[in-house]
Image 1: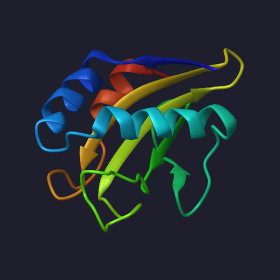
Image 2 (image 1 turned 90 degrees about the horizontal axis):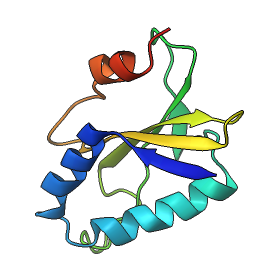
Image 3 (image 1 turned 45 degrees about the vertical axis):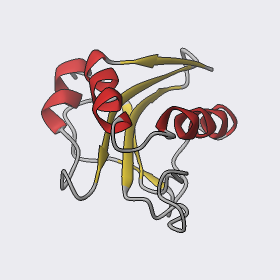
Image 4 (image 1 turned 180 degrees about the horizontal axis):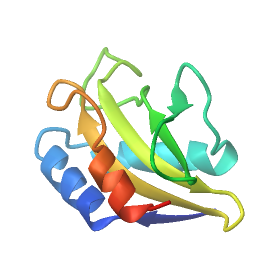
Length: 115
């Protein structure tokens, strides 16, 4: 499984790193899990429906962040990624905190993954 990151995703990480210093380490752990089980796994992650794309887009709701001690997987961080099993690839699309944004950027998804 290979990982790619959108330019916007890299900007998201750069901004969040100022507040969550362990974010790179936390993302490394998430990637290790995604290599083993890239499909959605409720209640930790689920597939986003009603998008104008045929690509499998998954939202991870439960991400442990060491910077938020005592919160465990209830850190509030959200990760959006595209799973392309035929190509053996995962593209990281968006990372945000639920207190800053209510939901994923659907325009970003449709821009990079048109139908």
